[in-house]
Image (cartoon, rainbow over all chains, first blue to last red; front, top):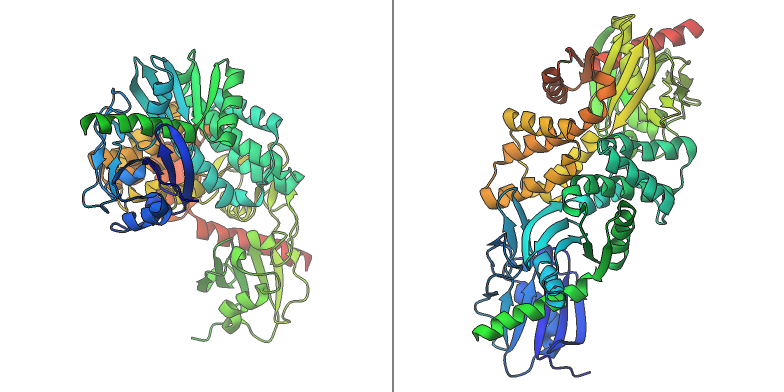
Length: 299
Length: 299
């Protein structure tokens, strides 16, 4: 298949690189690799990128619009943070100098918050995509993942946000800690809701209940499905207890990959929060389309 | 040096094997290796043990008294749990069958709690050692480590106890998570106390504050000493919030390795809990001496 892209959309996170060959707003083709920013040495970014997109390039130079950790200091080129409160794409994407002549590469700046200190790279683009499709939407956006973000949105601006390490804690506890012997692959929704309710109402029980997942397995042979759902419930319940000032009485848009977005929605719905789920790749592409408009407007 | 042991005391945990050549209550020599129970296959326990103690053995068979994970199902021989409430050594240590004829190996049973489900192997021996030296002591014993235990002691019995994964969480977060880039080696006591007070009074802030350690480093260049003390403070504060029913208004004996025992003492003292620190190896040896009395009484 001989696809030539009009431009290329890029989501370059810590662990994965995702690229889309674009024609206007239309996705012509997609590709991905495990050459996330965390696995690529300074100086090797262009080669890792060309591996995926070489065939999409023609003679005339095209725009490449990237977001994510690729804009960190250790990335392809640093794209300094903008500071909230701010629209999610308040500044011109940064041009990467000295690239292959067949492309003009731009990286979207991340957002920082001074107090409490916080940083994001990539999620601002998903928020921009959501707001491009839902202008003047006020409420709270939850972006679950390795580092889940909660963002308060008003008047098309990110007013404030907060990051939780829930996803990373879940991964470490379920695969590296003593709990790994007791965590299965399935799911027990009742156990999830029960554990969630416990840490949501008494967040100190997170510390108290974790080892119990192992002890219950040793003494009673608790099913791995149940232990997995309980671990997830305990962690997300503690996150919801801490993020209550964000979601209480607000409408919530959950932007995430299918499975984890549904888990967060099923955690929020019993709390009375009206929830909409959106796919994170679609929001990323919509945000990169919006970022390209900035670039074109300046060209 | 040609030391012959009258008997051998053994602390065989998940990650390390520690042995002491004993003459009555006196330690003649000690040795250790990294052949913890988690690194030794079924069938290889005797060889791993003889590697350390071969020279201490004579022609006449001697007692070997062991405690710890070596008594788990995957250990040298299973020593079934006793159930609390119980004295810390309520049952006869289990004889390991078919050992080298120069030794009679006994393993101390662990303690389990049915509700809430909990298990310990090794700490019961430290508690027994403490009670042998402090008979009729009522109060709370805190045993900080990878899996910190809090035990309520009354009338020489373990009435109830609870395990916290604080040590393992600290190890995973400081060496495996994104925080590893920001955690140093030193210590900032004021930052420790500040973070401890925060999660002790508002335990939900544990989830909220962890990523801030990374963000503060990226945005303000927070010192690694401060980040390390803050991580420790946030985790121990959350543990103290959850273990409050144990320590509030009680005298507390902290049994642990030097550094971590002092950290727990400095966390507890501002809460008004009178704290005594005891060395965990001394308590283990005292407990194994007590366990050997059971064995001798039955011989």
